[in-house]
Image (tube, rainbow, N blue to C red):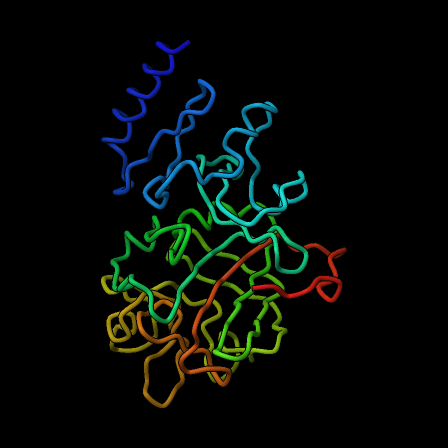
Length: 279
């Protein structure tokens, strides 16, 4: 068995050498079972994966997202291995505290982040950062996670003395240019993504080397981080979540302390008012 595992690991690394993904997959061994994690570069310590050994011992398949993990009985927020439909194994951060639980983290940034966020298209595609802290899991992988079901998206913003969220009843990432399509808005943080003032709904993703906004200037290059920009005209307020040193969200805050974007499948039986909002 050990010899077979070694052969498998060697084959994985030979295959990854020819991968189009610049961030090579990594292999985690658990109970003699080799798990090839495609976004291994986000993981700083495999010992922090909550469901690594449990999934092997119980002979369970890895779940498609954090919502499926919560329904299976996992209630601790942290790092998990998942396997979306027809996709490779991935590590993700799951938030099991916010209402209805089972939220998969799409982005996390803090005002004093060590990350510069001035990354190229490929980095935003495959992810960067530390999955236990500030990170971007990658548009490619988030598209794999959300493509087979209806998902909703929540942006949780923390000012120094206040926390509010903006939620969109549906979200979808297109495979090409990762155009972001959003549903109806609700929440106390104002609508800064689909309002007439700043309409980024249906916009493609922009990075410093890929301009998909409607301005002559590359907004990602101007602001120093990738996002779904419409325009960077000074007269139009622009959401800035993926920048270093400043987190800006419409009328709610121009210098938020912390922001997290999270997604989960739409669940008509979940009532947010039944759940306390936790940090």
